[in-house]
Amino acid sequence: MKHIYLVLALLTSLSTAVQAHDVTIANAWIRVTAPGQQATGAFMNITARQTMRLIGVSSGIAGVNEIHQMKMENDVMKMSAVPFLALPAGQTVQLKPGGYHLMFMDLKQTVPQGTQVPLTLTFENASGERSSLQINLPAKLSPAKGGMRHGQHH
Ligand SMILES: [Cu+2]
Image (cartoon, rainbow, N blue to C red):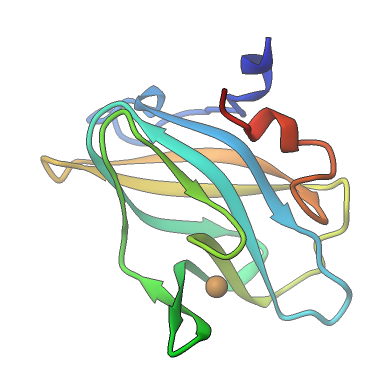
């Protein structure tokens, strides 16, 4: 029954080379912003059935859309853009606060709680074939606001 919530809208693939259903997105959300805030992040669990890379993200809300990682450097958490995120076949890769995330900067609008933000994710498979996936992310303050228990594994 928890699987009802696992798959968000997997819409059309722009390419026939890689089927959109080769990728499952679960527990996706984007952090709400206050007016004037310049950046926010989006988080989700991505499971690819074949080995792929997430190579890009686009949205209508931001001028800069990037894949970011966070890591400790000399006891300081730093985040930086990465060109891609590896998605090993059958393995769930978590994008979460403090780890990998999708970063939106130069925001063109606020992201109020309760709204849905459409994103397009671009993937590339081991053969170099690309596909796109559109998803709608609910805007939340934190994953605990309504989605957390669905993200736990048993
Ligand atoms: Cu970031």
